Image (cartoon, rainbow, N blue to C red; front, side, top):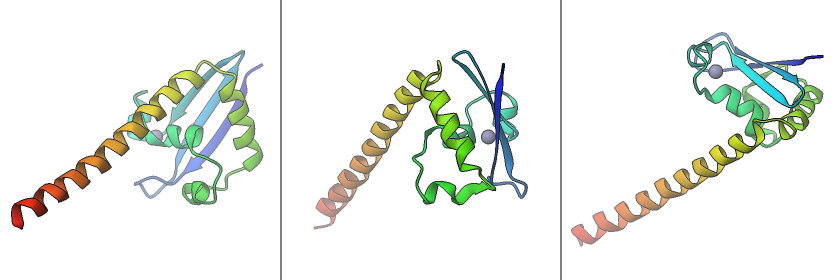
Length: 116
Ligand SMILES: [Zn+2]
């Protein structure tokens, strides 16, 4: 039996995007109605549903989100083939954000040293 979940997420377009998940025996698939997602390439909407913590900020972009569905999806995600690659991606993404912050700081110090 395939379990399915749908979430509406507000993106840059006026209409919210629909992110759909299907789960069967450890295999998780996800589609999104945004332009990138329609071509099966990376999109932040699918990522958002799967990866962000369950904080109040998290729900700001969701329309009529069913929290039960979301926590059920996360359980399935952990048991699926997506869990390892998504965590590898998040780790790399975090390192990238840290590197960007470090670069900004270094650039400011460099500018300051030139002007003093
Ligand atoms: Zn999308």
